[in-house]
Image 1: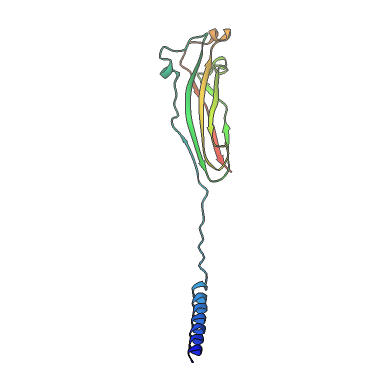
Image 2: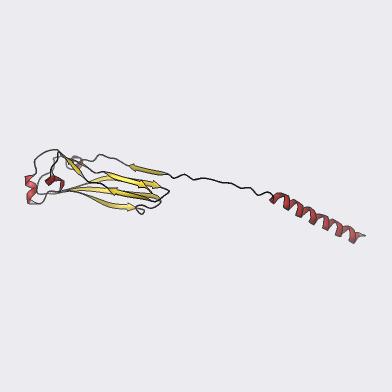
Length: 150
């Protein structure tokens, strides 16, 4: 009788355990989440002047460089980066040809998902003899940059 009672208790415990398991697992819970595309472009600054580093101005016969912006792109999709056509005002092809830009540092792969940081510097090389033909003036160079998420 003891054996029968123990077996009966074990069987009941197993049946209740299976039923309890079935109740806990049915129906399953489904959770959905939609992540939107997100894209951010920031510049730490957008105005740079040679006068900050060279307060007496720029002279023919020398070469000059200044630090430019730190450009940060944050994107959860791939993207493209374009450096547009540089312009100068007042319009002077000779001085425009002396101005240059350099991407000196890049943290992360340009165009990749995630956070990418690009540092620029600008240069004005007035060492060539024709630099003496540039009219004294205040010149403003404009660099258009475009970032586009794919």
